[in-house]
Length: 584
Image 1: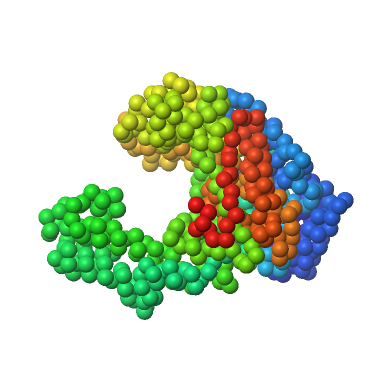
Image 2: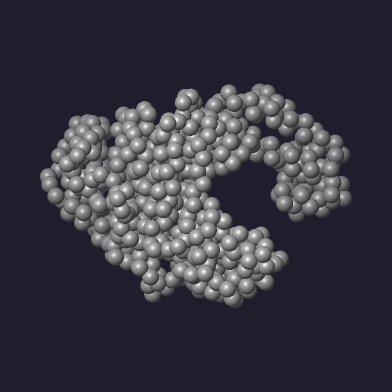
């Protein structure tokens, strides 16, 4: 059952719609939208409640009958993902609304959680991308204007912003929501993006919930860690004591007082000391034989921590013992997430001591081992490569092919996926081409498509941006030079990285569903962190083992749904700890 939602102030309008988007009942005005959604969600979750899609968050449903194509091509390779199994969730409502990021935080603040939704803005972004129309407005008002052939308005909120209240205007009109949803359902079926659209919408629910629940964070431990590294918190406008000490030592080593935060001053000071450097990047400084270079590297590392995750960061992002990031679903073209500030996707190892479970709870930390090479094995259908990817350590399983050296197997695979050509890469790639031709040809086909100016797609259909007019002009002038090769490297990696993001999204949706089945309310295990291929669940101690099982089962389900019948394994190494730093 699907219910379209139009929000107006504290109230709104609800209207049931069929799976194809056609109205299935009259519109119903409600004075309290949150209460109305809560009431219907509770009724639907009871035995015998409203019937929904057969599989969790719809990601376990078949992708509209389509089959994946070779990168940049149209010919099918093999059967697509299969339907879910007994792990499918209870039936329920799929809420159809313009923006999960816009409306769902209101529900969460009121203690209301929903099982599934269809996010019109995220789905519109996927559909526009599939059509090669990146960057066009994605709001309901814009989608409706395109549908009617009217002038398309700009989005009222810049991409990546996360409003806390639903904007009033055409995007809240229930008739617009219903019309845009119906058109999207037609295009989703036509393009085969059903699973991807459902996974993206499920991801939006998880993102809002993680921002609401927050990652347990000990502010006192954070302060102690910073103080131990830098000294006490400085007064505004001053550097921490250790940073100032390093700045003074850098000045002494270079024979003049400089600002270590000014690249131009550093380059000039080194030149006056008889050392020519092209930039102040760390990899450049590591090659410099001068005492100031080592000091600068120390300074840069501490300064980065101070700016990105220092005391001011904690003041902004840590509240009530929780780090509460704002995730941006699909914030990267490959489908990976971004954050709207806060740096949730790059918590420094030195600060992981501050991530501590509540008393009586545990952090279940899990990440996928060697995800992208395994994704390539599953995509390419290379039998020998896939057999090796059925082992826990893919690189060790392949070591025999590369003279018994695990590190050479790793270099070969990374070079294949990222277009590496330096050092031993050419010789190792020649071995890979000979021993694993299907895997090698898969990424080569993607690279050639990119170099020719074509687009490539992920396993579930996420599309890379087409080349810009400026690129096409440069490619003609360059005659197959650096611009062409650069795009080839991009598309080569896109098919793997974006397909890995597909798998991770489906994993997230499946895990979210399983965690809901383990409990509800204040003792329920909660997803509190997600980073590309890593998840953290905050769970009562007695449920930690059940959560570990849920993570592993979700990884296996994501493998089946995204890649079908494949011998490739996607192991999720999971451990229950009190402190994040103890997980690795």
